[in-house]
Every structure is written in structure tokens, then in C-alpha cells.
Length: 473
Ligand SMILES: Cc1ncc(COP(=O)(O)O)c(C=O)c1O
Image (cartoon, rainbow, N blue to C red; front, side, top):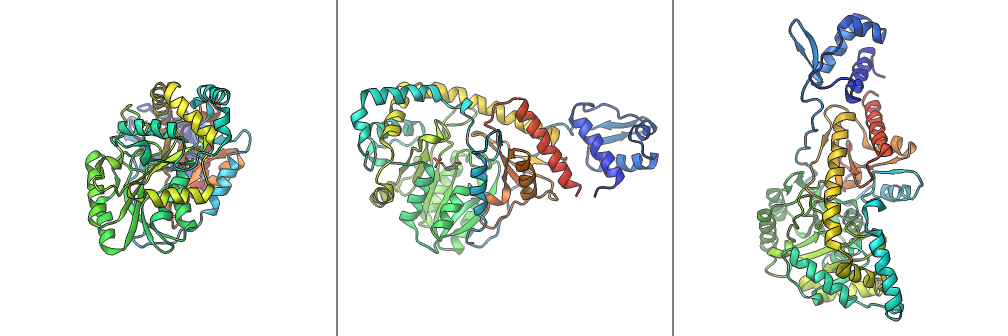
């Protein structure tokens, strides 16, 4: 239970965050505040001290207390992670299914899953492609599109790979039921139960689930929210452990949002070659850069055909299509066969419709528009966090995609926040889901791909209040 002066300090902070005072404004005098809050002058003096300690206000001699200019500015970025340095079995992933089920509840504010609201998706254009394919190619739709998958779609994907700096033939590509399936096929083809897979930390929870389901071990590598996986830490790990593969999201990672520089990508591929480990790249956000440029794939630097590249249209077209792909390099035969024995083929209708949309639907125009939208959304959500969340909250500054990683003050438990928020119809993704050992207890990931409206702004204000309430428990 918070003491009286802590409660007063919290209320003053909230008033500032709600815009009652701006940075640089003078707070009312001690006596006026004591009358307003109906507390003693000494309680106000203690509250002032606490606010000064938090960097919310500053004293000016013989003048009073002023709101600091930095208080309402953008939150700082979290520092590099420091996960366990040993390979671990993955635990605690049952929570993910609950989170995913919560997304199907009506009226819930979906900040938890990285699924764009349909307002951001080219639903109409895809409708046109589906109708056209059903009209013109209904017979073809009725049959299987056996692996490696529909040729028109593979051709369209190979064209897009040119933009990612990896000229490849349609015959190098296998169509899958989404990126999650691509990751599963990749790991199943190259590793067996008990093998060690190095991953970035925090990592996309879907990858952790695949590692868990296949009985492998995850070795979390320290990762910088601005530059990506630490190459020096990875090198040490490669010297110490028999690492079968390194799996990561080098372009606009989920949840950190960084994009690895070209130089670091090249060094990473060279390091993987030197230590004879396989790189599994998840490039699902590669098309969603905020500065409109398409960063290159790790395959651009792959001189030995050893990188396995996985992706899908779930973030850049429609997640419900369930269409992804894998470029398996020298593991092509194993992976193509694994795809076949797993589910024979991916849906023919979806493949044909995506191929049509890529060729005639204005995909690049759509991407130019949605990248700008996501950039603005991410900025607005970060600003709101700066305004409405407890002081000391840190947030990543993604370069693309639409998720942000939020570090709350370390006395706030993300699982409790998740439970409280869900009870109030707000879904968030608690940090422990992003670690094999349920680290990141005071972190959450938020998706910013929800339309900016009253519900979203109120939801963020409310989430901030819930965070405050947990802080004072
Ligand atoms: C980094 C990453 N990889 C893979 C996936 C799963 O993609 P798909 O829906 O194509 O299976 C997601 C979805 O959230 C993701 O964020």
C-alpha cells in the first residue's frame, strides 16, 4: 500500500501526464497543494522530494518547483539484454495459446499479438484477386499445388528477392503455410532433439515454441535493441557450445525492431561459415521499413548457400492467407520433402490469389502507404507511453515493422499487468513469453498496428494507470 505522500506524488505525476501542466510550468505552492490534496504541508514536502528523485520536477531557488523539460520527452531505449549463458529447454510457452485465444474475443483492444488491424491490410485488392482467380482458374484451384508450390507465386517471390539483394530462381523456393511452418521445416531438416539453437534474446515466441516442440535447446544470446544480436557474445558461444543453428530476425526483429547493418550481416554470415553452423533467417518484416528502403537478406552475403531464409505474407498482405515460403539453399531436398510429408501442399487458391495480387494489385504502392502508416502509429504509441506510463519506462525505437518492446520499472510484474489488462479488455504480450527461461518479467511487447482512435488512446492511458497501480503495491 502506498504511503500518503507517494499517493500525492502519483496524482501530481498523472496530472502532468494528462496535460494539466506542461514541461517548464511551475507547480502551485506548497500551501495551495496541501489545501487541494487535504494533506499536511510536510506530506507535500515529502511528495516534492519523491518527484525530484524521479526527475519529474526540479527546484529553482526562491521560486518553487518546475516540471522538468525532459520529463515529457521520449522514453529512453532499453539496454542490451543479458540472458543465461547456458543452453536451456524452453519453458512456460502454454501462456501463448491463452494470449492467442484472447484475440478472438470481441471488442478487445489488440495490443498483444503482432497481427495488423484489417484497416491496414489490402483487403479489397485481395478480394479482387480472389474473385478473378475463382472466375478464371477454378479448375486449377480445385487441385493440389504440390511442393515446391505454385510456379506463378514462386516467380513473383523470386522477383521480390531481387529487392532483398538475393537474385534467385523460382526453383530455389518452397511455398509453405506461413513463416511459422518455414521455421519448423528449417529446424526439423537440420537439427535433432537435444541440439542447441542459438537465438536472439528477447526472441519471437513462435520460434521458442518450435524449439520446444522439437525437443531442442535454446541458447539465448545478448541482443542490443538498436544493433541486434551481439556478435562477440555469439562468437564466444560458438567457441563454447556445439551450436547447430543460429535463428534470428535480422530485419525489424520481433520484439526489438532493430535492423542489423549490412556490415554486421556480412560478419554474421562469415562467422556462421567459420564455425560451420547454419543460419536461419526470419525475414517476415523485411518489406516494412520506415524509410521505404528494402534491407538486404542474409542470403545476400551467403557464398556457400548455407543460409536458410524464411518468410511469409502474414505481415505485409493478410495473415489469414497462410502463405509463406522458404529458400532452403543446400537443404532444398530435405526441406521440400518435409513440407510434403507434413501437409502435402499449401492452399492452391491462396497461392494463386497472392500471385495475382503481386503481379497486378499494386503491392508496392500498398507497401509505400502502409510503411508510413506504421511509422506514424509507432511514434504515437511511443509518445503516449512517455506521457502515461510510470517514469523510468523505456521503449525501443524500431526502424520498421509495428511492434515495440517496453521495459517497465523493475517492480512492475508484466504477468500481473497482463492479467489486469485482459480483465479490462486490453491484450498485451508479457515479456516472459519472449525468453526460454521466462526472463523479462518487467517487459511487455505492444503491437502498434491498431487504428489511432479514442479506444486506443484511452487503452494506453488505462494501461499506464494499471502499471502505476502495480508499482505502488
Ligand atoms: C518474427 C515472426 N516470425 C514468424 C511469425 C509467424 O508468421 P506466420 O503467420 O506467417 O506463420 C510471426 C508472427 O507473428 C513473427 O512475428
